[in-house]
Amino acid sequence: MKTSTFSNPAVISFFFLIVGLSSIFVSVNASRNHIVGGVHGWGLRSGSYNIWALHRSFAAGNTLQFKYTRGAHNVVRVHAAGYEKCRATEKESAKAMSTGSDKLTLKKGMNYFICSFEGHCTAGMKIKVHAK
Ligand SMILES: [Cu+2]
Image (tube, rainbow, N blue to C red; front, side, top):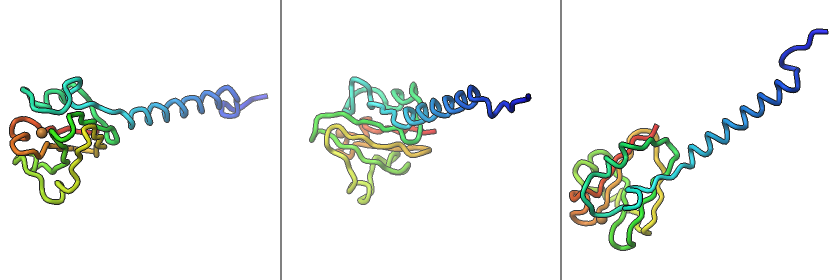
């Protein structure tokens, strides 16, 4: 008697195992959190945050966590122009994060963030990240 490959219980179990493992992998990947600047966090320092970002890969749905002393900085999601000019629009500023431990979810494509405290962005508190 010939049995179809797809009615074989071992094949079916293997199939569901693979589906299960892939979904676990996808959810782990989506929930990945990146602490901006690593142990140095988000602050005034020498060097660009884009160099930190260069050595990492980011996916849409990942989060960037900005850690700093509350009241010393903030985080504002801006557009490309705001990133270049170090200037957030009124609408963007209204959504500024300032808890000292802010998590922002990456959108597919380029994501731009700055600190909107006077002079901080021009001093280097800006980051752009490409999410796959
Ligand atoms: Cu700042």
